[in-house]
Image (cartoon, rainbow, N blue to C red; front, side, top):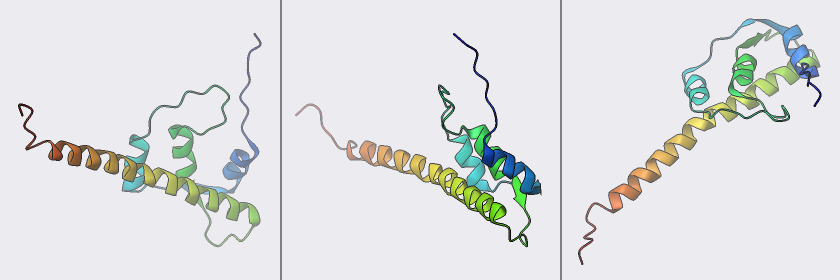
Length: 111
């Protein structure tokens, strides 16, 4: 079995080139990243939470009008929406579990 070499993608190189500094993650982004399950990389086709954190922590110049910067900003916003939605996924799961548990509060198993 041959050893695999993982090289950075084109968008990763463009993001490094266009970034001007570090961006601080918001509260919902941080908790969304905490709620993500670990990723099993077989083909390296998906982003794990470390990759998402590195994309979200890049800062881009707001006055830069190049197409590459727009693509990087759009990608960062899409990943941010995905990460923030993890909070609502866990909230819905806990809420439905609570409602199910609440429905059994008067259940009489003897009858």
